[in-house]
Length: 284
Image (cartoon, rainbow, N blue to C red):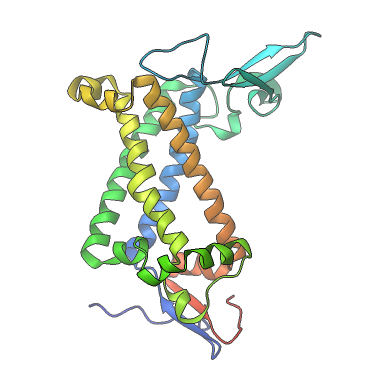
């Protein structure tokens, strides 16, 4: 086994222990995934803007969408943004349906600041989306292969027996923002592992497959794929839902990075070195 890089000066103190937590391949894959998912999200919102409605089944039922983001005028003739979910409508003016674009109110499902490109351009958005979809898949395949060969994947996503038995304790620690210290902090806790497992083995593959099921070319080659999702429109809706679940995962992940020690976590994912708190010290 190759020796770990030298410990950076100032990383460890008598009350803290520095461990080499994240190998280079893991760190590179992490940041490439973050960049790919961000561009996929923003280009995906631009694609959604071209037809801002979702349906279940094989066809678009325009009169009864599962979700629609549109604009309308109220009784006084004022424009407003509207989100319709299951027949119920919500006024979302200024955020969804109707928002400012270059100082003017524009009919857009998602505002210009949240999409790539910022202007209405479906063709360019599709090119960005497909390019970074491949980047995500290739990067993910390298990560999985590396993780399987080195054992990193098992250590990072499969809970140990004692962790499963203390599942309730881990939930309490997270709810009260008390995080493991000492030896226990050298491994991911059970909630981290199960969440990463759900993302790696569930959400990401489902998002990719649902995306493929929307492709006419893939439908011609693998007609069974679209049937698995109950139709092309159902695949599009599932793709949208999974994307939102991934956004929720990222938000929670970032919040926990902040509250559990931002600089320590960032140093770990940039340099690989992570400081473990001992004897009541606080990682910095």
